[in-house]
Amino acid sequence: MSDIKLSDCVGRIKESPTLAITAKAARYKSEGKDIIGLAAGEPDFDTPQHIKDAAKKAIDNGFTKYTPVSGIPSLKKAIIEKFKRDNNLEYNANEIIVSVGGKQCIFNFCLAVLNAGDEVIIPAPYWVSYADIALVSNAKPVIVECGIEQKFKMTAKQLEKAITPKTKLLMLNSPSNPTGAVYSKEELDSLAKILTKHPNILIGTDDMYEHVKLMDIPFYNILNVEPSLKDRCVVMNGVSKAYSMTGWRIGFAAGPCDIIKAMEILQSQSTSNPTSISQVAAEAALSGEQACMQPMIKAFRERHDYVIKSFNEIPGLSCIEAQGAFYAFPDARKAIERLYDQKILKEKTDLALADYLLEKEGVAIVPGSVFGSDGYFRISFATSMDNLVEAMKRIKRALTV
Image (cartoon, rainbow, N blue to C red; front, side, top):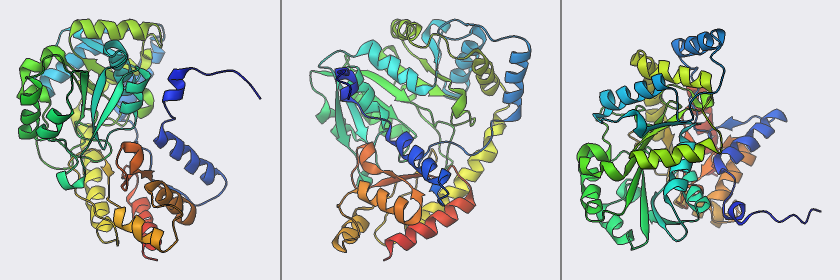
């Protein structure tokens, strides 16, 4: 047995739970078990053809060398135009960085601005990596619980209460992974009013699901309601979800040039530039015909309506409508309590429920506790309707014993 001591940094964090659950489900499937995976947040559609064609052309033209660390100029130009077109936000090239996925943008941002003892306010339920990335940066995650009763959104009162002299950063995610909650203009305005009173707090806004709209409501970024926050806000986005390009690994961020430069320095010592071919593909996605998203969004809306209705017909579950992204986040606390009382679950936890559904019915879900919300679970409906129909049958069977 090795006596090598690993770093304190690695000891502070854990493996990505969604990736771990997806891997376990894949292993069961490879062993011949009938598994329906609802854990991974990945569109089941292929990348649109014109995007793939741009990448193929880049390969044929020999565009396979190193690029500038922060992204090729033409892609930066496309990102600048995207922010202007979609968000009414103005940026210069030195305020833009392209990274290896949205996760690296967040990673670089946190490492660039956080120090030991700094606090990061994270509304829960939250995307699983926010808290761990804060911990890697030696900062302290401050989790603000926002349950189903308040539609999974943080209030201005909660934000104000969470702020201390050590608060350095607020992370916002709308539409939300895992809940699909979307902050309205009025809700963002109320948060912005608190932030204007605390000029030392930075804001990170993760807009990765901006275009995955399940309802006909406008998308707002906090800078749309309070432009004065621009000099301390980093806006992060990418092509993974809207264009079904998860494996291409392209995310981007816009913000104050000194923060963006610091992120570039960090990136130069980790991955260097994002893949050259993927950058060309991302440029084609952002600059090309945006109607390519519509068939996916139409399917996501139909699936959303089906799973929300189905969950609310299952004893012990309660699920509110999502407004964006492709997730449902049912409250399973009553179901967990009943199954525990019946001695079906060994523990009264969402982890036990997830194990039960995978082992008994072959349905892979993600327990809510990994998102900071005990007693819930997340499913992705970025899979076929046939899979969803069968999955809902199995979940209902498992919870109506």
